[in-house]
Image (cartoon, rainbow, N blue to C red; front, top):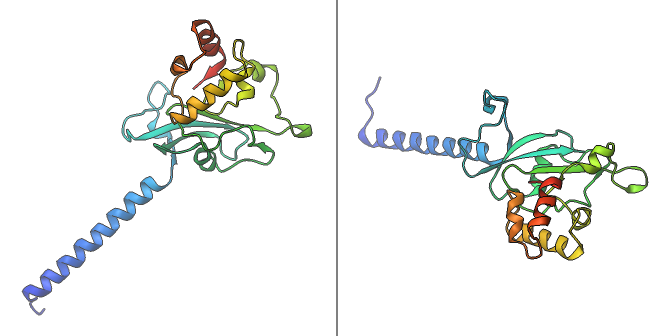
Length: 194
């Protein structure tokens, strides 16, 4: 076997390093470019989701009229539309008009895509769905007005605050919205979820 000159060794070394860098970048881009569902391996022994690692990610629950409902990890700064897309997109009959798809996601948020019923209105799965908590991350002003103590002005202020601050991680953050007092906060806790 012929002996390699010093310049040949340098060239081969440079090519090897370049290939390693390109490969590492491709792996990193592939790993963070798309959101992945939270795998079963991230579940803790208590059945919850382990949030360790990926500190800049958010974990959201996408439910309702989507192709693959589930819990997904997305990069920080992702929008509701990204979560819906990650869940396979809206299913046939999904009613997207009532969702602010441009809102930023907050960690622990649930995005609920309602199904369009007869006449184009949102289908409700029984009376429990009407009385159940409303998703704070995707609630419309009209949905918020259904809560005792919230009128049109306060509902609009809540949605504006949520959109200006990139979502809400907790119902308790609403105490920063003008017009919401202690009594209204108690009503909100019972009717809203992050």
